[in-house]
Length: 232
Length: 249
Image (cartoon, rainbow over all chains, first blue to last red; front, side, top):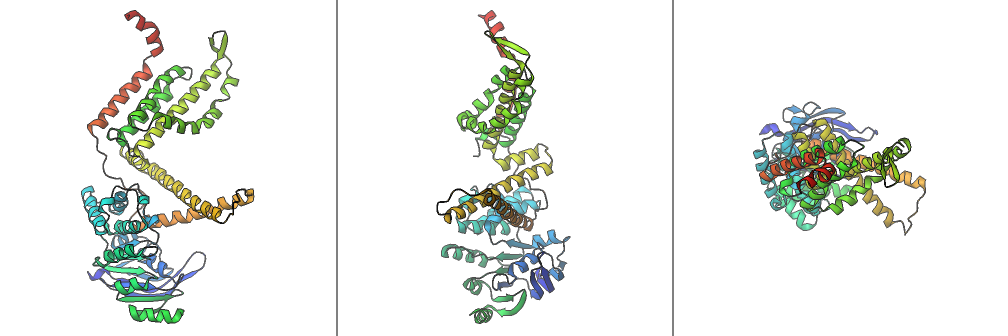
């Protein structure tokens, strides 16, 4: 499974409005690792995540997911490997029922309908929403919507799960549930978060970003200490 | 609303298409035939539990537009069509009534269709019966964008009320700013939604949902309504009632 690593080689990215979001970032995330991206708002965490999925492509440098360089041509292949959960679950849930939302990815992968059904069933039961399949997403609570968004990515059976601030706006119970779901995911997890507790519990490794640059990379406890010293 | 089992989306869609063709094919000087065709929205809305009153009230929304389309006919076509007592009724008025009826009946059939199937099922059915992918995807995304604009408008309205201290009147310039901002916000949200769709493999065509099951009741619904609509369209009921019926008594 070593081909499911993520490698950034001297990646820089500048938004069309000239905001430099990433500045010569180089890092390697091996298969099975759980990594938290830490940093202040605007430090480049979300941009880094979007590069992993091919939703943004580097202005310079190269991103590789396994042996595949992330380019416009390979993006669809990369997205089968890298599943991304966005910060706002409402951006991900737009179909009439939770079932259809979770089936959206597998159907785009043109899987047969019985395989789609199997994946939807497994994903919904993994997040505890097996009884909500027929509901519309707006009928779910905030925590349930987040779980449905995670399920909609799990159903694609990705080898790498990328999450943007997954615990934002969750109550303690929903947060604990999310932690349980993510802990049960056996492959690579990369998450951008401001939630130090989540990072400590889930990710042995953290990367600290500041103004688009990696300024610390190592054990989560130590990286959080560096971060706290910088902001306090 | 998901509708009752016998109104499965494809059968409902096909019945609606046949109905629209039937309504639009009625000659403009024969509004009486359209009155008989009103049986479909009236009966079907009651069977499916939506209620004709609700469908009728919703259909009135389009009335100003239909009136605008037909209002010039009475002024342009003054040739007498028939006499009501001693009062001559022009062909223009007949065609005006005909346009109103056509518009209302067509819109009522569409309301009935959407209320019973929901937009997504409707678009899936359109795809399955051969409508171009580009068209159905565009329609679905437009529908999604409209809901998104509505969501953003609600958020902005709440924010405005929360800090408006009871103020309800705003200048045209302010409204212009609100609308501009609404478009920017909704377009940003649309970009986020699109990004989330792309991340899950969306490449321009929305995937079809589960195949629609054609139950026996859906077949019965389809067959029965097509037969009824064709009878209502092609049998001259006024003639039947006034000429044929007395012969049999």
